[in-house]
Image (cartoon, rainbow, N blue to C red):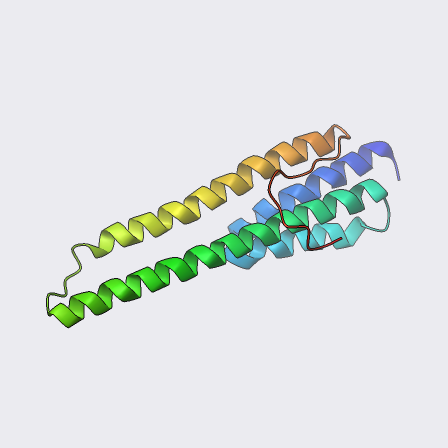
Length: 139
């Protein structure tokens, strides 16, 4: 494989997570990175390495999104139960919970875009990128 093509595919595996997240939200980021990696992983050690990095990062972000969802669901449940128990249920404070959960998901999305773009730029320059926080699940 040509070095230019190797760099291009190295960048694409990182961008696959962003593309997948836009299309399928919480699991699309994993699918996007996985598909890009599986297509060319046997053609180059560089692409294989960068694909594993991208996939591990996307899996980490999906776990973070899952944790955010669980925490906010529990928090919403306690809030609703307390309001119903006191017989003063209204939706006035519900907007605060919704805003905070959307903000948390937004932060994860921004982190995905920022770190994936940095990784894609580095990979397109032929430099192997290692994400600063990522569980190394795929080895």
